[in-house]
Length: 158
Image (cartoon, rainbow, N blue to C red; front, side):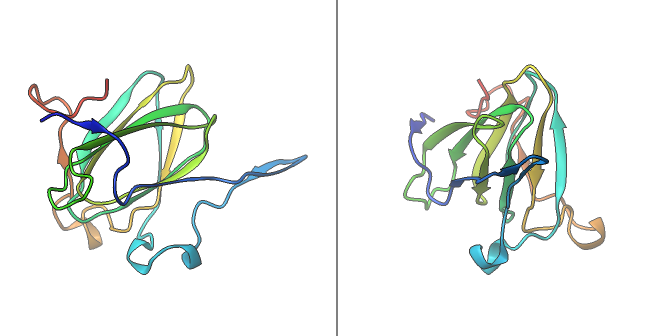
């Protein structure tokens, strides 16, 4: 498949406003009064990725990811609209975000995504997905299709 660079329906990349003072800064990642009820987080986690290392690409069948990318470090996030019924099916979008461009990034189900730490230091991602990993009590299959390591994958983090 050939991908067209462009916007992807349902992707939200909202700049995060940092409120700074002499102690440091604070940024609101999400507010229940600014999210539709179907995006209300079910859990939260933080991950650290080492310099020049990638994670993904993968997609979720039901889960929406709500990433807070605010540093330290920067990521190049790449997304592919793999939803055949989407008006932006076949589109690819890349964004650099993190310390240099703090954003809240909402990625809906069916959008393949992955990221590479493009920094010379560890970079952090905080995620507030709207589904529990492996469901309640970790008793269900993982809601994920992984593409990394597949020789003929059309999804590459390059």
